[in-house]
Structures are given as structure tokens and as C-alpha cells.
Image (cartoon, rainbow, N blue to C red; front, top):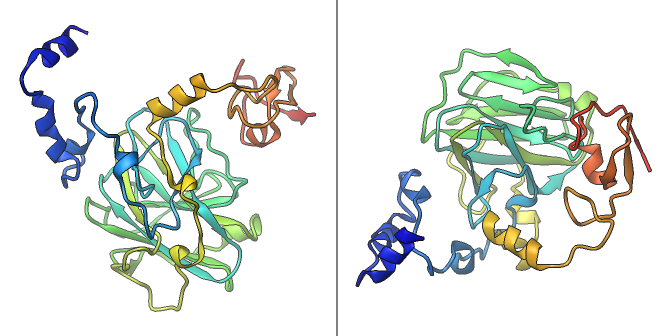
Amino acid sequence: LSICNRLASLDSNPLLMLEGWLNDDNFCKREVVVANGRVLSYLRFNTDGINVMLNHNDVSEYLKLSPDGLEARSDVSSFESVRCTFQVSEGVWYYEALIVTSGVMQIGWATKNSKFLNLEGYGIGDDEFSVSYDGCRQLIWHNANSVSNNHPQWKPGDILGCLLNMDSQNIVFYLNGKPISTPHSEVFAHAKMGFFAAASFMSFQQCRFNFGKDPFLYPPAISFCKFNDYAILSPDQKIILPRKKKMEELQEGSVPDGSCHLCYDKPGLVILQPCHHRGICAVCASMLERCPFCRAAIEKRCL
């Protein structure tokens, strides 16, 4: 409070100079604290033409999403994950991810059955319903098993291409237009439809996604579809509130009695076995391996 009072006593708030860093190429500068009273980015950001985003309703709790829904960053020690807003079940699809930081990220494809176990360190590629590429460790991940390759490590500025071919049931990853390995097909033994672009992030990692609004830098030679040409988002669905603002609205709003303790949306009717804790909805319970209250392993979910 004393700092805020001191700043308020000045003729010009020195933090205002940091506003010029908002769109700086250096991601560290974009993370600075700015002065009170500024118009929040989500209120002034133009999302016209963006038909696919990272889904702010399908993301682990500590991942940061940019106001346009195309950039994600983790600043915590857990393994944070997110899926996009559009799923595909047929045809050939491609998207690109700009590597902003060169650390551990697992970027690829996942169905709705893929679980985000951020505190346990499980992300995209760590279950049977997802597959991903980690260019820091040079590994392709599926079902918590990895396959190494001889491709160079990714670095800031690199472009990861992700091609999903539902017709021939294979997935190919590219780094700066060059295939990383032979096509992957094992995930299709467990998942036949409903694939989302998805990614997981370790501490201080960040990347930006292109789902087709902008031209791809390294489009594959095969004919493919772009998410942005087929998806639709309403204006309300494009609003990504800052975490603090979202929590404030939740506190101000009324949560119906009996709501799920995790999402506060659906009725919390599921009883977890064998610990018998309750108050979780069926959707949230399906994504849990351990009870969020006592951390006991979940053997059964009962209504």
C-alpha cells in the first residue's frame, strides 16, 4: 500500500513507461506489472478473424493465456496443459506453433479423454489419448512412453508443424518444415475421433499458435484443412479474462448449492471410491486420477 500511495503522489506514474513493452518481442518485457487503472488487454484486443483459440474453459488452472487466445505461458512448477476450442474427426489438418522459449513443452494432439494431471507432471502425450513432440528433449511422447530422434533441439523462433491425417491415421511433426521422424500411428489404436490441438508447458515456457488465421510459414506438401476456416466462436467465447478478474467475478457471482467444487458449473454428484469424497461433477471426475481432497487414488466413480 505504501508503494501505491507513493506512486499516486507523483505527477506522472513511472510505470506508464512500461506500457510500451506490451507488444515487445522480448516475452520478459511483456510480463511486467503495469500501473493501476490501465484498460485490461482483453477489453482492447481485436479478435476479429480469430475463429479458433486455446480454450480458457479447457485448461489447467495456472496456465496463462494471451488476450487473443493464441499464446500460452507457464510460470509455475507444475506441468500445465490446454486444448484448443475446435475438434476434428475426419480429413487432414495442420497447425503451427512458434517456439518462444526453448525448454520442455509437449505440443501435439489430444482427445477430450486425455487428462490434465498438472500436479502429477502428466501432460499431452502422457496417456493413450494423446501424442506430442518435445523439441527440448527431442522426444515424441505417447502413453507416457517416448521415442527419441536425431533432429536438432528446437530454439526460440523455430516453427513446430503438427499434421493430423485422419484418413490414413497418422501424425507427422515438422521443425521448420523438415519432418522430425516417421509418421506416428499408435494413438489411433485408442482414439478414432475428436482430436484437438493441445500442449503442455513446464516452468517458464511459452509458445504461440497459428491455427490458420495467418499464413503458415512451412505448409506441408499434402493437401490439408485449417482450423480457422471451419470453426466459429461467438464474441463471448473470445473473451479471455485475466485470472484475477475471473476469480473476482466468481466471488461476486452466486454459485448454486451442490455445484462441483472444481468447475462450479455442473452439479457435484459423483462419489469417489474408496475415499467416499463427493462434490465433483462427472466431467471433472473423469479427468482425475487422485481425489483432490485427500489425494487417494481413485478406483471408481459413482453417481
